[in-house]
Length: 281
Image (tube, rainbow, N blue to C red; front, side, top):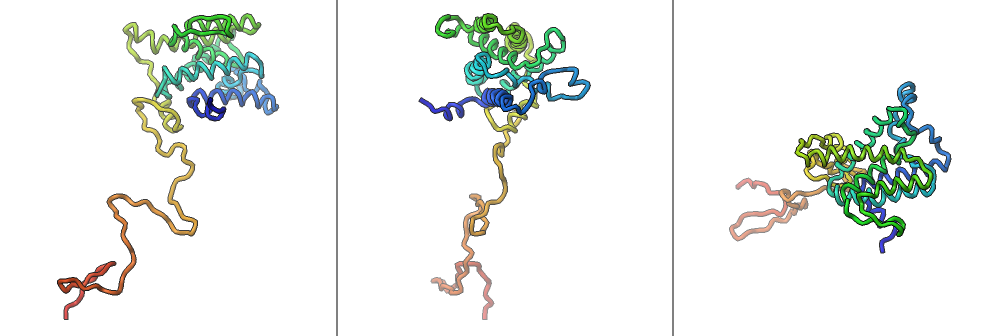
């Protein structure tokens, strides 16, 4: 059985980063480090006061600690990780682009006042559930050991659970709409004979390459070999001498010179260090 640290280290990078960010955002709320209204989505404040951070921060607040909050984190830890390990295996940039596209889609939907919600993190989580259900439609899912159903119906079961618990179902519906839009453009449309034009942008590949986490097959950007390295340059020993790396083409040589010549069989003079031409008498 793995320890909590080993489990944490085994989580793929995108799911780990998003889950931890959501957890820390709620934890900071209980420490009273910020007011949730200061990170909520409000297009009036974004346009009039140029508070553009609201376009991003609203996706990291999943609400106060509660059963609903725990359920959202479980979805990220289970279904988000499952997608990143299976469908998006060695496709970190594609998985990151899926979340970015979902966030952009939800921001566009929120332009309509009736469809807007202050915090759209729950919608983004439901997008993950919807795409997982489409990718694994025949997987058997057990909900609290009471109901067993196929993976295709998991989003609808989660929707019904929110309804039973008295939560608003609008965030779930918006997330399913964004998820279906992504799945249609990347899977259904190409399978129907359409051209696959919805590709991961180059700037997303650059982010992953600079980040140095995860793997992307056939990436147009080479990974930064120094990603994750804090210091670069020459190294020095503690006694003050500099150490350098020798290449195979530069064999190690000694710098000591010997004043005592050795006489060869042919009468010539040889030195172990540098050689000098001797003037003949």
